[in-house]
Image 1 (spheres, helix red, strand yellow):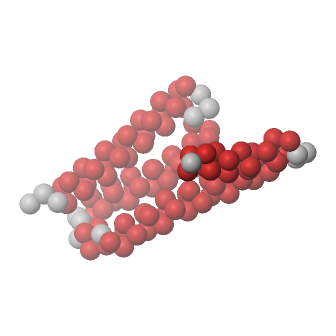
Image 2 (spheres, helix red, strand yellow):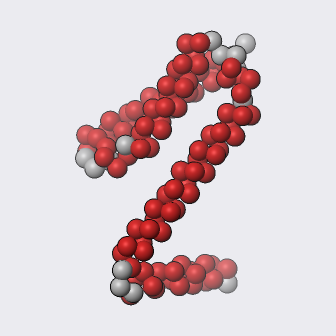
Image 3 (cartoon, helix red, strand yellow):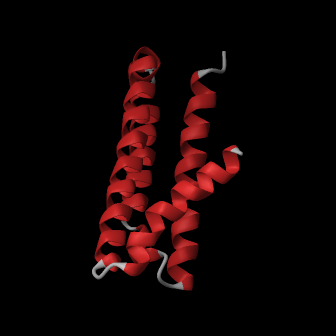
Amino acid sequence: MRTFRNVAIIALIAVPVAFLPGGGAATRAVLAALGIGFLASIGFAGWQGYRANQFTISTLPDVSRAVFFAAVGLLVLMVVAADELLASGGGTLVWIGLIALAVAAIIRVWTEAHTY
């Protein structure tokens, strides 16, 4: 019953988009709002994570802290550049490689910070 209700809600939202004039513009507006909300929630989670680990981050050696913030900046840059880079095969490989590099750098700094 719950699944039927969820499908009905989605169908109710989809009907005006599919059959009313200007539905494509409404779809783009809804998707843009959802994207902004998603990115805002990721930013909020990052801010909460920073606040929870502020002491750990501030006591990192300067080089480790620089690598950590550079990796976080690279992740933000890759989110912003996703549309352009994911438009081609080579760009997709570069995007995946840079994401993997940033994640590996963050994991390495974090594990070094928690190794005694």
